[in-house]
Length: 371
Image 1 (cartoon, rainbow, N blue to C red):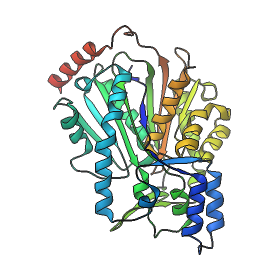
Image 2 (image 1 turned 30 degrees about the vertical axis):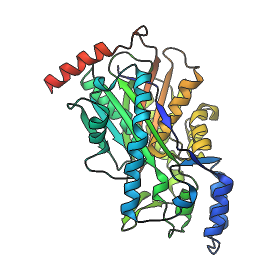
Image 3 (image 1 turned 135 degrees about the vertical axis):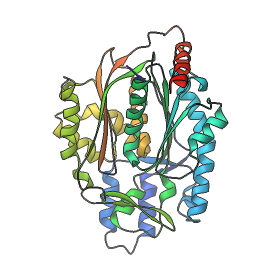
Image 4 (image 1 turned 90 degrees about the vertical axis):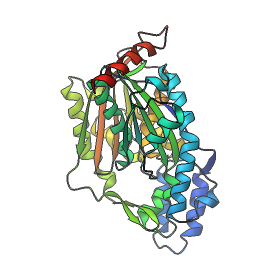
């Protein structure tokens, strides 16, 4: 079975606290009659601080969509390679061992994709497949894991690299003062994450099964309005209720594998906000402590979109308490409303005395010939 290895995650150097966020909201939206509600919602997120790629003064300015997208590209190229190298080190591989790069981001646009630049700039093989995903929002972290699982199942000795680059601060729109926009401005943070899914060997989550579920007729609940000024985030007030229909889908995936969702060893859940975790705890009948890694990501970094599941998983690795063959679930939620879900067991590398890259490279050669 393919193994999801330890992720690497980087957050930028500039920090904004919840207190600073509230003060800015009071100053910029003083005339908004719904400001008290927005402030209360921001406080209820539990987000203590967030990291952003530029100082807050520059973040609050809007130099235009073209310049913002240029900033996205510059920071992505400056920050992503280091995170990739750390993820490769965690997996015991190098660039030549990677057969596909799955790049996810909903906060900037490039064509050719960032995957093409990475192949040229970092020395990945020219035969490396490219799978850029830009429109699944926060669910893309789970989707990337699932597509890597699918790829490595189809090509058992192949290796997949997942990259998440989310600069949510570049989507701030000064003219948007509705409740959803003000709340989002106090919830989202910036981060870059990467992880390797190995077709053979590796320590981490041995991916067993995955699935996707879309709640019918909810495609306008989380969306972008794309205008001359860029991406305008739109959030429906019904979004916090989505765990009621998604929890059965998650339970069904686990049930179909013969496991009990109430008695797993780890839960890596996208923390879009505290209610997601609270509701899942209720609907799945799971103690809230089981979601501690996701909640820690939310508290310390805010909602970092598709990178949430990678950061929460990295915290699970850091804790180091999962026993061999421990069972768990990974789930990302986002626009659609879409859930991308996976289950797996904890395994330790059978090639622990070596990095296993020789076997992985042989698989890559076979993949190149047979594709």
